[in-house]
Length: 498
Image 1 (cartoon, helix red, strand yellow):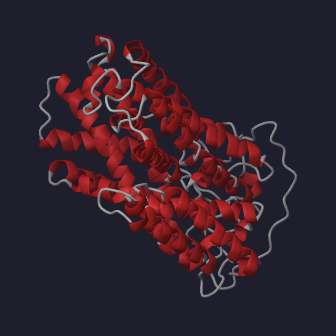
Image 2 (cartoon, rainbow, N blue to C red; image 1 turned 90 degrees about the vertical axis):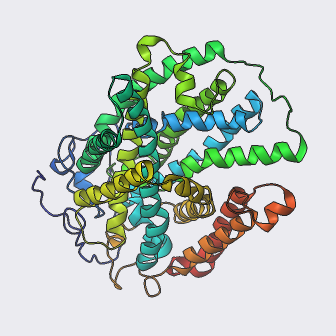
Image 3 (cartoon, helix red, strand yellow; image 1 turned 30 degrees about the vertical axis):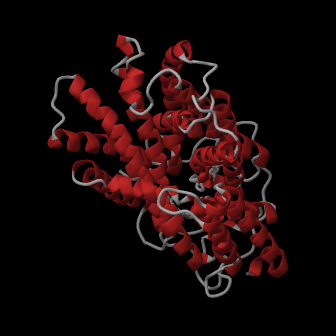
């Protein structure tokens, strides 16, 4: 049951009807971050979060930056990272080349940390902060494509991976995994995921510390047995050299970086922190929470590829694990799926609100979750939908790379100064309405960045002319650099008025 809670000065508690502020940035009150303030009634663990995309008033800010570490670590101690690490070796890299790629690719978590600092500064989620980049109306289009749509696809992909692990566990219990049982398993995993997403921010922050601990212990067992059997001097039978080596290194970095770059929603989980919270601490704990497990787990996957066949990772890894741990490994995969999908479901609900749909946050999470479940059921039981989605996601770096770069550039160019109540004002009187509701500087930067990235991409469904000529996929560095540079020039030439 949703607790009653008085409306905030910026509108209804769930962000469905924000009031129009005067458009001036509120003065930043003195705030101490030496001790965590108690959580207000509207955002306590075990109670449905009252707020949606509305502005979080200073009186309701609480928490410490270090709480963000567990939130991001729980989402990144996961099975898919293990698989991606194994792919690096399967592509032909030596073990230490794979380690270098793991480190460089995960450095993109620094950008996720930069985006997170806009949460305490504005008191709003990323889906609303980006109104400063694209305008109120323009951001609805941006969020629909790069936010809400991608969230649904990622939830379906992660759910499918967790469901397959759960199917194996069910069969180990002597139950035939027929269509009805598979459907029941998918629904059960989704139900737990959606409950966490519906309860929201405080529940996520409270649960993810023990989840991180449990997943770390599980993957430590896997790691111990992988390290014992790993070939530390592994090199490909036909070592890559020259252009071929550079091509695979760039593909590997792009593959790893696509993980952190998909998290343009990091302010969603930092927006409750007091306004005076250290930006460096917010960025640091967020980035470290993704970077540290990202490097360890992906490199563990690379090590595993020198010891077992990572073409069928779950079965191969189970062959080297002790008997007592064999049934616990699928459970760890399911738990990691729940952790990452609960965050995605939470943010997809905020994205649906930011698109202009007048719906309560808690209900929007359920709607998005049911849609993702439907796609997963169709994919696993009827069609090869996930194959098509996987192919589509290979091209998302063309958009999410430049999109992340523009957002990060905006944070730096504004020196992280945002008018929180103004961001929640969707009317022409609001300070982020710009020209007919669109900030053309943001769209020009995103468009040019995506266009140049498309010229340089080398993927299975499409290869750009530059990539074809050079034999290298430069879409990530080129797209992000062009997008950030164009936005910086237009921002400074025309100012934030677009």
